[in-house]
Amino acid sequence: MNKFKISFINKTVSILSVLALLIAMVVPLIIGIDSHAITPRVMLSEYSLSSDEIYPGDSFTINFKLKNTSKNPVMNLKCTVSSDNGEFIPVESTGSSYVAEIKGEEEIELSVDLTAMKKLAEKSYKLTIKTEYEDWSNKYSASDSIYIPIKLKTEVLISETYIAEEEIRLGDNIEIVSTINNIGGADIYKVQAVSSGDNIAEANCYVGDIKSGKQGNIDIITKATAVSTTSTYDNKIDITYEDIDGNEYRETVFLGNDGRIEVLEQDYSDIIKVKEDTSTGMTNNMKLLIVLACVAVLVLFFVVKRVMKRKRLEKEFD
Image 1 (cartoon, helix red, strand yellow):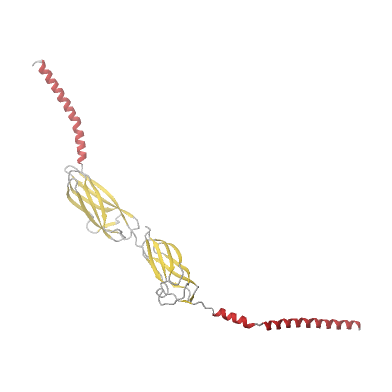
Image 2 (cartoon, rainbow, N blue to C red; image 1 turned 180 degrees about the vertical axis):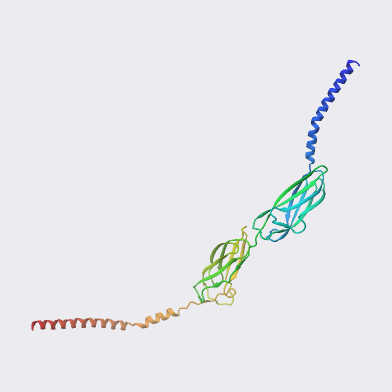
């Protein structure tokens, strides 16, 4: 074997060694990148609730979508919906769903029926959606959290509203008394009552906040503005209040007899009688006689006094 052939073989071996070294260095990086790219990841993509407002004891459905973000399929997927402290109970089964396969970049839709426990407070509760799945070589798990807002019902009962005055005349003050009872599960806020109508003046009464199971007093002082002349009137009080979200509610209570308050004309007979009594009780002639009588009494007093003094002097000289 000549020197040329030996040199060629040596160079070839050197080149192959360098190539082998490069392959040994690059291939793990390529495999690592590729394995990372093909790792299946199932994620919650969107969800919706069957009801806009959920109250304690209500049943509702949560609809949600899971997406396989990998290009490779996943198999034997188990999805479980649960709450931390059992605030939401599955209506049927255990709240778990099974899917045999989700293809790469495919999205599936699932739904679970739940019931909210009856004694929940008015706030948001966490609901966890946990997924467990596998591919040809490994098993995986993931979880997503959503928050379900629970509302409490607002409900009030207005006790019988009455008017303190038995007889009302034009211009008189009218006192309207009532009670608002919060019989709902939620506290109510900014409670106020406003009177209005055909023959009473507008007036208001601020009650404030009322906790669940408590009551507030309504006491309005208004005024009779017109005499009742027809059988139907629209006299009322409007009661307004808000829930925790600022939504306003209104209750209307009609006053008197279906809104009619009997307002009479003002009675001036007593004033006229007093004027008549004072005008006929003492005339100018009677006043003159009284003055003359007083003068006569004074004159008589001085005359008697002078006579008694004269008699006393005469007695001393004798």
